[in-house]
Length: 162
Image 1 (spheres, rainbow, N blue to C red):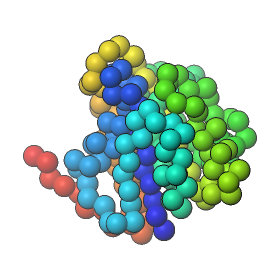
Image 2: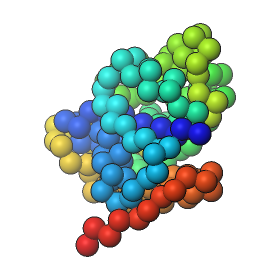
Image 3: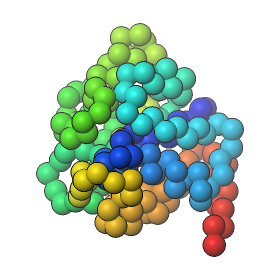
Image 4: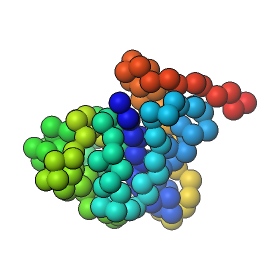
């Protein structure tokens, strides 16, 4: 089973780049077997539909516009996307994930399992670093995703970066 971890976002707008920072964090702190792919989807949107179609299991990490406080992380499953229950994205990039998944579904190539981890941003100011609040969320979310990968039988090795 091929699993894709897809980070979306614009690295030039602080917290808007959370998904890309997340993929970078995973690359620095973990090594994965060949059945797990980390992908920096940036702001490419529909141009990376093929990456979703190549996977059996997809984790998407991005910012969202949802009721709550900055730094809160929400989990949404494929069924919620397809039923239109996903909050409106705040990202100035790309068409929404729901539209991308709908396209893959029309082509009968939508991954069986898709999970979005969406986080409420604190800042959209110009800058290449996450706010300290969102930067502090990277380790916990990484451990959550890694635990799910390991439970599914994927090989994951933690890297000592100290």
